[in-house]
Amino acid sequence: MDYTPPASVPGRRLGPRPLTEDGVAALLDRYAFHDSVLRRVVLDQEFGRYATPPRAARLVIDAMVMSEDLRWEPVSLDLLGVRRFRIDESVTTTWVLYDPPQFTRFDGLLQVDLCAERFGNLHPENAEEVFEGSSLVFEVAGGTWSALNPWGQQDVSGSKGRP
Image 1 (tube, one colour):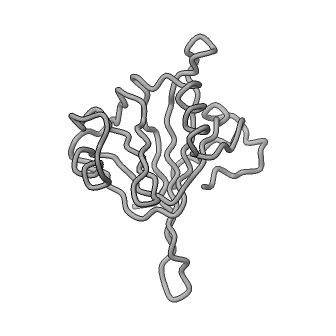
Image 2 (cartoon, helix red, strand yellow):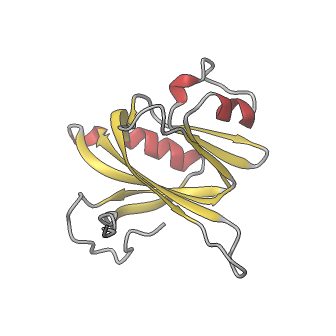
């Protein structure tokens, strides 16, 4: 059986913007996430004697741009210093997102929850509550978001689609 590598992630069109309070507000202002789709999760972790400990993750979501007649656009969340994550593949295989991602901060770390509708409480009280109530969540030191070129378009940014 031959291995076929997945198609690359489109290059950046706009960004990166930090996932700070202002950056998250800009992300949520630009995109309508209802019925958006998580298209790709790329985890980057080195192993071995000389491995660097912080992991990185890139989440690519097809979301609608609110200011442009709800045109679909890929957007990436590049998460740095991934401490832990949870991807419960038994829940679904399509990963349609019905609500916007929820961003919280506890103990100096950022929690990015892509299944926030499972909380029961819109304002979790700690990081454990975030993880207990979600099937797709990451805890990270920080990160950025970027608007990407359309799928299949030539990468002109030089980013090579890597986190």
